Amino acid sequence: MSNVTILAITPSLKSFILTVVYYQQNGLMVACCKGFVDIIYGLHTCPFIDINHQDNEGNTALMIASQAGHVNTVMYLLNYFADIDTEIKDCRGFTALIKAAMTGRNDVMAALLMAGAHIHALDSTRGQCTRDWALKTGRYETVLRLRRLSMRPKAEQCCESYVPEWPELQERVAKATADKSARQKITQRIKNTFGFRFPRNPQDNGALDHMVRITTSVHSPLISTGCRPLCPTSPPEVGKRRMAVPELMKKHPAKDLEQSSVCHSNGSVSHIIPTIQCSAEMERRGSMLSLASTKVTTTFISRTMARRNSVFPSGCIPKIDVSRPSDATPKKEKKKKKKAKSLLEPPKWS
Image 1 (cartoon, rainbow, N blue to C red):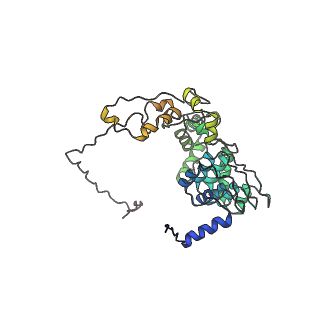
Image 2: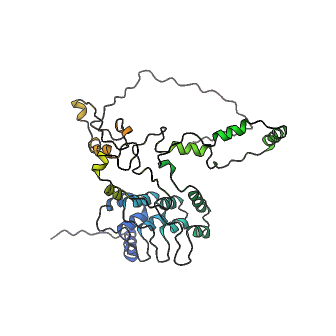
Image 3: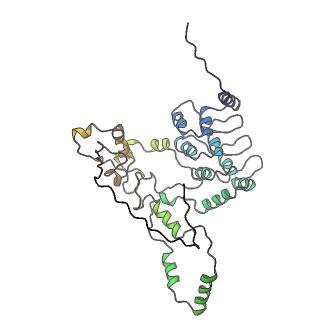
């Protein structure tokens, strides 16, 4: 007698099967609904998966992930599925961008806009755009995010230009050091004495804004990045379609990435493989990561990082010995501070 496997149908499994059958969804849609990025990664190489497949309500995998607010899932779909269409509409005429704005998914909305989603696309029912639906549903933070993205549509951190100086510094210093009249001095003293200082958001193009910009720039010497953009002259921009990874690999073959700097600046692609002299004992400690990382280092690691790379070491991993000191570390004496009644005390977490 042959063995028969009996599958217990639980209520959750039954509802899952009914949902998939009724809504005509595939496995990718279900994974996007739940935010399972690992399953989406496994389905990426499946030839039978249609990224633009629509269920009986017209929803695609991108719409489901956008409405659910899974930012990592949306970013993976936009970066690794070359044939994804951001302008598909459901039965009510809503796109993925409109769905993200209606539900207040600000990060998802920003990711869709930077990937080339059309901000002025109108729904086929009422003829309203993304901003109109955000106002209609009371998503005022989403409207503010749209306004800020329209003011700064380009990601300046990915450009070649790097300006460490604050452009408005000289003007501010000259204004502060200028001679003031007696009336201006009295007015300023009255404001400092009787004025109220409320917390405010950082000003646009201010000092804090400039500090964030120079510390997140790709070409900033204050940070160390292991990669450089393929097209530094064409950074991500609102409304401009960004190419997916498979499209970039087709446009720039591996030979071109290894031998020459295709669309790179300052020769950021390097074919130099760092060599480390290791003994026989250390060579036995080489991991699969170090063996498989040779192609990664020669393709995507910049020349400045190729010689000193601790993320993907080539050759072998050095042995590190940790020794414990014999003498115990002396403890510092705690100083008793006088408690001031007019000041707030920091909270004590138990």
